[in-house]
Image 1 (cartoon, rainbow, N blue to C red):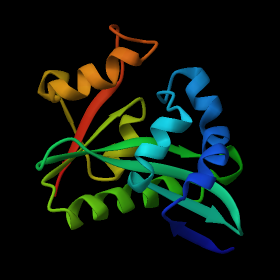
Image 2: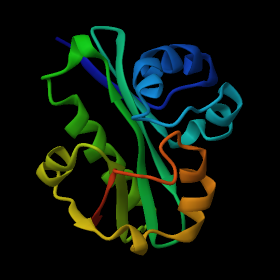
Image 3: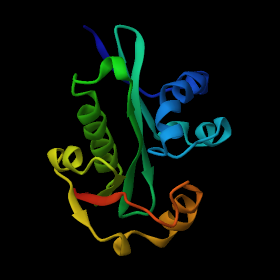
Length: 153
């Protein structure tokens, strides 16, 4: 089995949107339009298994101090291969390369992020720009049951 991690191009956007579609419909991941994905394409990391797109995530930088793991998804056929953890590790390494001090995740998968070294924080500690730029677009807003987690770098 060959795993390859790479930075996608805009040509990958339709496949990425198809891969994340089910999680968007469930409300687990925010919808990102093709235009939104294109403007942030450099923040994404994709993993393929034997040439097939298996998952992706984005490292979104909020400030010189804080980045966020966004849109983490692994296709159903590829779960159990630890690709999610490897994608989170790729986000952490990318954040470190930029000199970021902390990485945030808003998640329904607390145990998973704990296994990646994250700890829970109060949502009141999340930067205001995160709340107004993303959370207000969520179908669960303002009643959010996601857990805010961070890892210090």
